[in-house]
Image (cartoon, rainbow, N blue to C red):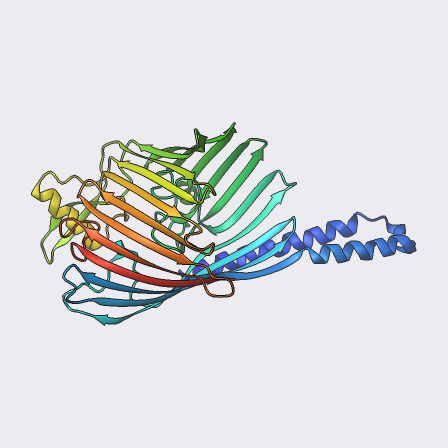
Length: 442
């Protein structure tokens, strides 16, 4: 893995330097040979050089976050306290309008201030950071364009396709699904080449996914066979943007997606849907008991369909109230009609096989929020999410403060209800989590 990262870094940086140097050479070649003896031309050349030098920008930024979590059962007779420090740091070298080099790194440091043996120490289903130190290279890529008509991005990158905010059926390219409970998107990108061609109201994208080529670079044929291809086209019609996406990979059924976003009758509307003739997400389908209890993971051979719709309405005299409602259906989610289904489902949850918020077949989400709550630097929101398939749910009340000249912070109270060992109750049914966090962006 370190070798791959080093190769990507050197390739992206090398290409960036080539573009920058080639543009300087082209600028120098545009002047006439005799013009160097012209004093006015000399002064103009100096001015142009100063402007060109100002085009080089070095940007260093990121987000740092400190959070504390208290997990308490319904009886309030014990608790577990987590402290977490995490964030993202990025470096961008920008040479306008020719090229851009970008690299971002995430980090996480966690510890348990106190842990009662009766409560599990961690759970990926409650947005708790893993209890260790981690550093991950998220993205490292190089951008450039051809006559500002065709745009290229080469390197490790996260593909941001689709319009939804909670469930993202069209996000079938990245390694991991977007986590709406996380304040920082720390997903790792895939190595590849993205091409973007904008034409007025139309945009065309192509992404050549090289992730599977690293172990198969012996021959050119293997390299080509292992390269996956993703395509996307979007078009703006009035207040709506419509898009079609697809993903083709050898040995895997093709995936097709559709998404739209727009404004209608006072509502912001977002919808996504994806379809495949076979499953492409891992599921527990059997158990092997020798030498130990081990889940057997496979993919369904039946067609898979998933869709989501989000409706958002802002209202109030100052438009500071916001109501959002979302629904999600996933045909590839687990069914709980038999005891065997229950066993496979619980094993998938406890082993982390699959993606959070995609285990069930039916989900619902609603959130009511108000900006300028009491003062113009406070906001409050109430959120409800339910996995209708296993009847577990999460209720969260969040209060945020952004006082001028003071670090912004927020605190929240969440209640997890339903039967034990469900998606939202894996660490215990009818439990509470109190969260306090502060963050700074620079």
